[in-house]
Image 1: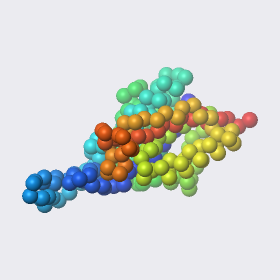
Image 2: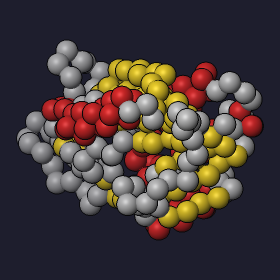
Image 3: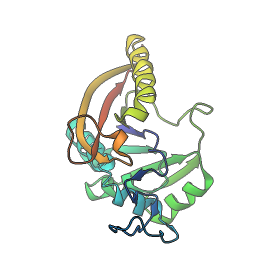
Image 4: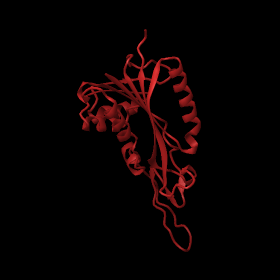
Length: 213
């Protein structure tokens, strides 16, 4: 069984919530009744520190979904991690017993990070939309994306494409699961009305690639 994992685009790189700058830059702002104090110079965070600060849960949630859907043992599945750069998904997969991990990324620098984590058996450079992915028929495809306001246009375009694939008989939907606590918002404008915990929502899709007749 081959499984492909895709993650949606990241949130905007920086956004201010009050006087606190949220990742990817660590910011310390003084809070005083006399007004804002000068901020320290931003300290660059690694991609792993970025997602840790955001309490980013997509890799674990996607692997949860896959583990429940796979018909056989994890070690028998071949996993293709698309946009694998940080290696976060690979770490989750290995912890659940998945041993055959391949990764692709469109960035040579991110591929270096993936190689450094030492969890992938094969890595290759691949630009989505320009090159076909090395994913055979009959496998599972797991996709994740956010559902915050700035990402809705992308989410709608993704779902339109998924619907076309399903109508054409190429893919079959197995799961479309909304998750309320996806990651911390990078701006108050990204939080849904009524949400008080500062999290945005996201969604997990799981499809079965249909075999050609």
